[in-house]
Amino acid sequence: MPLQLGDTVPNFTQDSTEGPINLYEYAGDSWVILFSHPKDFTPVCTTELGAVAKLMPEFQKRNVKVLGLSVDSNESHKGWLNDIEETQGAKLNFPLIADHDRKVANLYNMIHPNEDNVFTVRTVFVIDPNKKLRLTLTYPAPTGRNFDEILRVVDSLQMTDKHKVATPVNWKQGEDVIILPSVNNQEAAVMFPSGWKELKPYLRVTAQPKG
Ligand code: BEZ
Image 1 (spheres, rainbow, N blue to C red):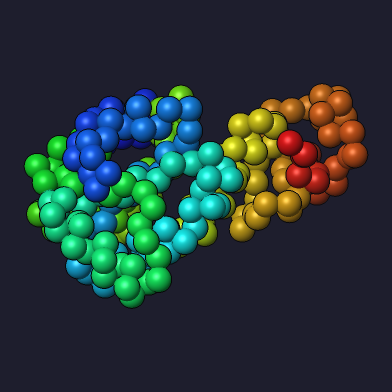
Image 2: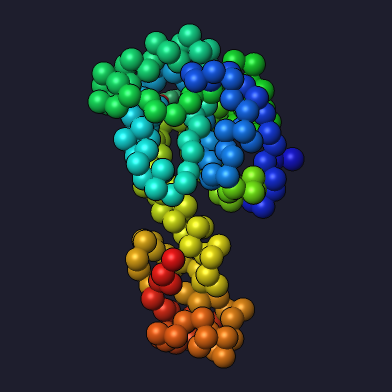
């Protein structure tokens, strides 16, 4: 059965460009973004890995550790890193798992045989510090992911974990949020003293809570 949101993610130990990685030890108390790409020395993946390396300060600000994966060997990965640095102007600053025996790919259902029965599709798993799965994304091989969107989801998850709010369509950090329908107006008055705008009893908009 594929992993579902809210599941505790399975642990693994696998080779990587930074030596053997045990997921739970690597994660510690951080969030983790585990993402797969189909193959080394491919153009879209090259741009993705460069972009993720450049976004590292943003991941760090959010206490997020990053872990890439492909089913190629460490030897192959190491050669490819030079190309990423040369073409994208960014040195890889996170481990890239060498899932040569497809241990992790199978555990996380990253191979979709009707798409390709050898290589992984582009998956993204956002894992919280309790090792719970909080987001999954699956993209096809020809389409590069939008990592700004993944950061946006992390912002939403981290904020909505702390406050009884949800984030509306296309929300970005600092914009208004929605008070959860499970919070009644009496409780809302205590939680959101600056008030809210009630468009419908179930649609109450308030400023993003601080902290
Ligand atoms: C790529 O990363 O460029 C790619 C990989 C597999 C199929 C198509 C594109």
